[in-house]
Amino acid sequence: MNRALPALLCLLAVSCVPSKRREVDSPTWLRSGEVLIIGRVLLTPPLTPEEQSLSWLATDWRGKVMLVIGDEPTPISRPFSTSEYSGRIEAPADREFSVALPGASFSVRGCVVPLDLSGGPADQAVLPGGFRVEVKPGDVALYIGTLHYRRDEFLEGHHRRRGRRVPPHPVRVSEALGRFRPAAESADDAIPDAKAVA
Amino acid sequence: MLKLLAVPAPVFLLAACGGGMSQQMEDPKDLDASLVYGYIDMADGPCWLQWFNMHQVSPKVEKPYVNFRIDEGVFYAEFVPLGSFQFHELGGWGSFPNGNTSYNFMFPKQAEGLRIEKPGMYFIGCFKMKDLGNFFKSKYDIDISENPGEREVLSKMLPHAKGTLWEQDIRRRLEALK
Image (tube, rainbow over all chains, first blue to last red):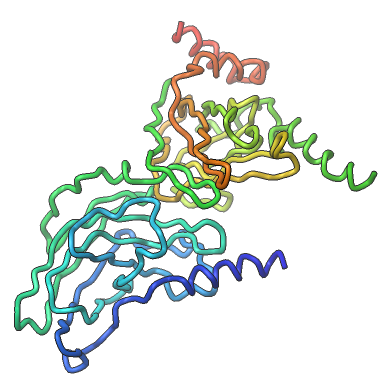
């Protein structure tokens, strides 16, 4: 039972995860009013297997970065709730994503990297976004380019899009991080910089 | 009777040795070792601090977890190698009325950390656990605290450094903080 409980909790958690955007390879697969969005998310250095603790139910998410989109470029807040995965774009690490979206402008709020979905409290890295993708009437397919995140060993970093530095996020990445994850909660502060004193 | 003894025994042992680590410091085996220390006030938490560790995220090593020695909220580790570290987990056994329960608090993997590029003494800071829960739901957070200061933390550690190379370093730092 001790082994089954985390698996059951994980099953429950994963089964509650809202659906992702429909992946399509060609405009011919689009439904009426939809537009094909193609792009790529690059994480440098890439995630290593040790950095993600995923149960067998979520192994499909290994190495993937989840793009969170919305009408407004509202930063992703912490704690990140499972319901916010709704309508995510699953971006594979090694290739471009290609999804069908409603034919309207949208904003990339940021990205989420699942770090711990092993049955206990979930943990994820939240990466900044904050830019808008304009969809014009008659657009069939849009290439939004590569969103390139460079991160350090603490999973903090900045991002560039199409080789151009995106304006700084209104909230410093480290300020948006949860410092503490008791049971199923998290906070919004960060560990202060430690200083060498001798 | 056996059932009654089975639980208090490990609780007593853990309380006595700080979650498995002795309070007594040792001479560094590695010349690049650093002393990392701080304090966390758990008075508002469900348990006292009995274990606390951090995770070495860079460079990758076979045993990446560093356990702190603990003395009444003061945590310290004198064997920390060069590298980058993040807080990983802290906890303890519940005190009355939460007895017989193990509490573990995890830190998120995406957070600022400690980057040690040269050996030395690193004061991480003082923290205080806050109870933000209510009758129906428990919720805790930690916040930065001004008290006690680094001097008090070092004074608490000093007896545990007696006879080691760290003793002089701690005394020197205490002098500097006067």
